[in-house]
Amino acid sequence: MILALDTSTQWISLALADENSVLAEHTWRTTNTHTAELAPEIERTLRASGTSTASLRAVAVALG
Image (cartoon, rainbow, N blue to C red; front, side, top):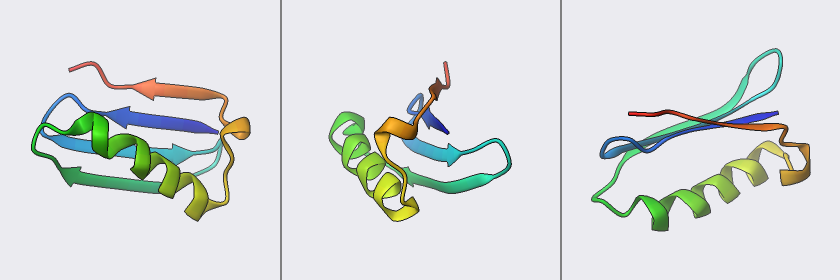
């Protein structure tokens, strides 16, 4: 399971994927509160998809 994150602009994107498909994805606009918004949204996404942090094998981060 891979958690992908992009916080390089005022748009935050995250996705959760396995070897076969994207299980969840979410993009939203922020007002420079990336840190405060990202962690809760990751938690919600993991919970909604039935994924635990223990099943994450990698975190992919966009460099922008």
